[in-house]
Image (cartoon, rainbow, N blue to C red; front, top):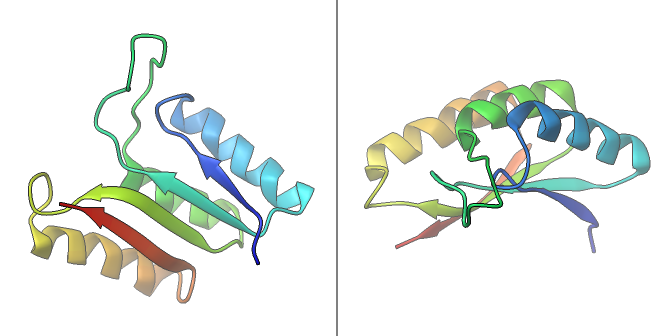
Length: 104
């Protein structure tokens, strides 16, 4: 079993999330999950950073494995574009982007 931290792009700015994942690694968390939302869920949530740009920065700043949830494959990202995004991160950080969950 792995204990992970979820980096919620709707709740915090990308810069804040980067600081939180560094703190999570220091605190002993074993993985990071994130999700891909183009807009906040509500007016109270004022953020919606780009998941893919942020993943590159976060993976560079930590050594933890990552996973991304709620990827809107097919209707926001063409499958070839999604494959390109994932493959680029996988090549840059071998073995660290361990899972993605695409929504249809």
